[in-house]
Amino acid sequence: MDVELIFKIAAVGIIVAVLTQLLIRSGREEQAMLTSLAGLIVVLTLVITQISSLFTTIKQLFGF
Image (cartoon, rainbow, N blue to C red; front, side, top):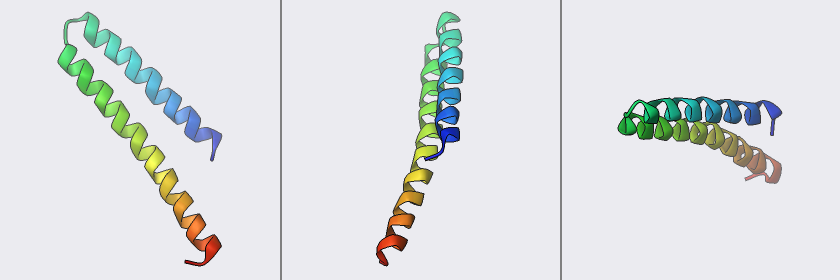
């Protein structure tokens, strides 16, 4: 696992947290929830690509 992946996830988390707080304070709770959901989806896609790479490496290692 790369340290770059951790930094990407942290950056997405910080940006989403700031945007969510700004939207909540301006009275737009629905958009804040959608922003949080979008951030979650972005992070999940990053993690799923890494898990897919892990499974590919395991398959090659054991010759499946």
